[in-house]
Each structure stands twice: as structure tokens, then as C-alpha cells.
Length: 117
Image (tube, rainbow, N blue to C red; front, side, top):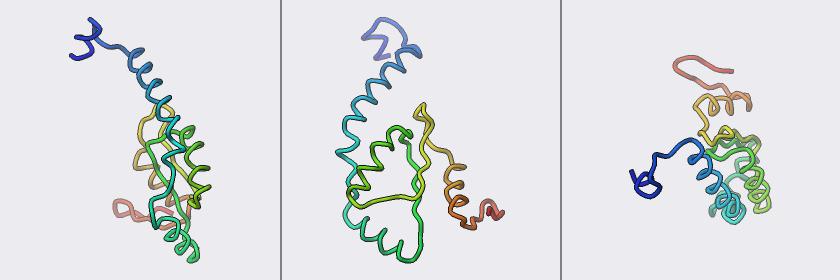
């Protein structure tokens, strides 16, 4: 209703895509700035890595967004072994991606009473 009041018509797919593109420009311009790990994460990850624990990440960010975030985080000492991103459309990762993280790392993972290897 707000769009109709402002523009005099209902929004369409082109409007949605244009708005998303504008949002991505703002997001991409700020990604590196906000990629610093929170206090204690680098030390915790280092301690766990000494126990041969690997790290994966799932995110609502796209692969292109993570191409900015991962090096910036790594420059601050935080490195992950695998990253599952959202689809290029920006749709969030699904539970299957989360499971794929465990499988990729060779973990045994009980899922709905089954064991995934």
C-alpha cells in the first residue's frame, strides 16, 4: 500500500530487483568495514584448531559478498575452512546446506534418526 501511495501503482518484479540492486550497492560498500571478528573469536578458533577442529560457516550472504568478507576477516585472524552461501538471488541457505557442512568435514551427523556420513 505504501508503494502504491507513493508511485500510483502496484510494485512489480522489476521494482523488487531494482530495490535489491540498490541495497546490494550499500551492503557491498560496508561489508569489509564490518568484517572484524567479535572479541574472543580468533583466540577460541585458534584453541579449537589446535585440537584439529575445522570450521564452516553458513550465511545469508551470496558468494560474491563472501568474496569481500572472507579476506577481510582473514586479515583480522579469522579463517574458515568452508563456507556455504545463499543462492545468487539472496535466498537464505537451507538446512541441507547446513548438513553438507558436516558431511564435507567428515562428521557423523544424526539426522531424523539416520546417520549421515
